[in-house]
Image (cartoon, rainbow, N blue to C red; front, top):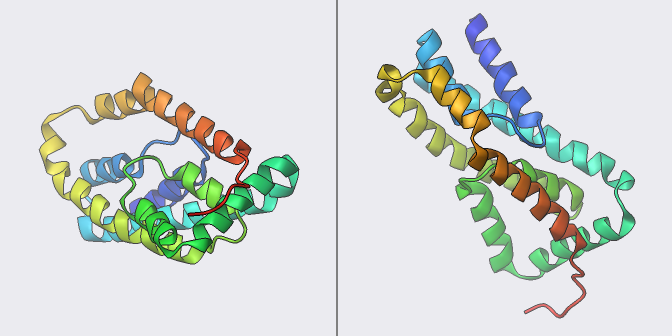
Length: 186
């Protein structure tokens, strides 16, 4: 039981970090291989823990938005207005949270800053997508048994590509809030 509680804490904690956390799938694979845990239970706990972590992250950004530059927050709110104006954009946003293969931290940070975006549907889309992807990763973990897991985790955390992607996503979030969204909507 303590391994399950540990996995919940580690996964929720990783999903609270705004950047540079190991991907949840790698944490799930580690726990599957290291502790021989029930894969179904681990996936379900992983989805719930990751979703909880992202919900808290979004709400932290919602709370600290008053500390951000007013122009930045106003621009982010205009993004929210543009999304609300068009049902296709709203659906696209949900699809992004469901399917996104990239780190979702910056997506939840942006959603937190934009108060008009409802977090509930995004969290449900995130959980649904993660249920599928985590199931695939955990079920495929047996193929990794012949590989050094420590080497994979270290490579994932220190990969220049992984670091570059995180930096680009942070810069993208900053850029998104600095765009003047006053133009006409389509």
